[in-house]
Image (cartoon, rainbow, N blue to C red; front, side, top):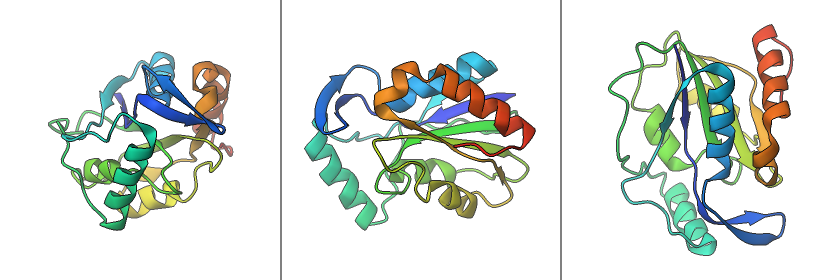
Length: 175
């Protein structure tokens, strides 16, 4: 079975130099596209105390968590991941790294024998060091090539996601 686990944020977001309010987070849009193409189940990684709705406050909170190497408490976790062999992991790129809540999620499970397919949304930084961070954190997992989608392109990512998935399964480069 397949799972798409993702961290995403709606509210005020940054798009190429300007702020815009969105009802569905960019990473969630990409996650839904992947789930539609793969038949995977969806799981949203949510913090018990979410970051603020407005972008500038959210950024300050996320930076504080990053500096403190915090592991925000999650609202829920899957009971286990035993039934899933392919896991698509989605997140926004926060300063070249994963959001700290994604570390909370990753550190809650044994990844031995799982195949992870990382994907992120960003506004110019691509995957940064996120794929390497996932590989370091998820000992025993096979971490595939990642996909980086501009947040401003999340509404129209079907072709890019489909191409990545085709290359990802055949072993070619992606990103």
